Image (cartoon, one colour):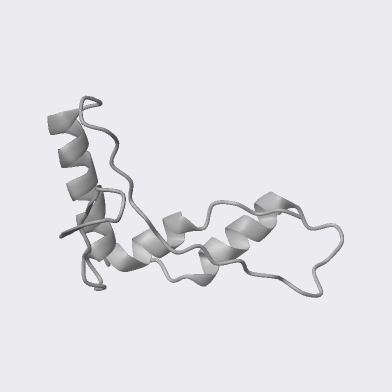
Length: 92
């Protein structure tokens, strides 16, 4: 935990299989306890752009989205679930 240059509080979690779910739990707990009186709680993350080549011209964004989610094995592991849920925006 440290103070940022602009005086905000930054809480950094180590990267692990549980860090995504831990961050969500911490975010919701702080938001529930403090509400809007103190400021806002943000969960930072990494965005990745994936370019799909040789895509069938008839493919829809929904089909591509489903194929990407299907490519990640279904598992009860929280990290794997988070990866599947993180795929959210497909543009064709």
